[in-house]
Image (cartoon, rainbow, N blue to C red; front, side, top):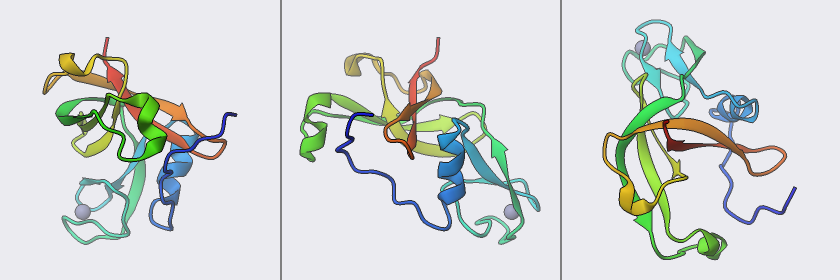
Length: 136
Ligand SMILES: [Zn+2]
């Protein structure tokens, strides 16, 4: 695999399970067993009811663009070949919002609320990043 120069996620005790699922190309988030709230990013307790009882449920991978920005300058040199690129906040159909890259569309054509779908980018042997592309 080609050497990956960009920053990698900081994997810790709270989120290691999340990244382990990503490596298997599954987007899973913690759902509170007490109140049903789906929380992201991962944490040890529910921000809604403070229960520590949760299970990792699989997300559909479908969502829509809640907001986005277009990077036209490489603030980190490792991104210089990607300019211009899109960082979007995606509203998942299940409720949580997550930041990611939106790939495969001209930045001028992105629209708020446009439907997007998940894919995984295997950037290293250990890390697969969840990213999005326009839904067909
Ligand atoms: Zn809860």
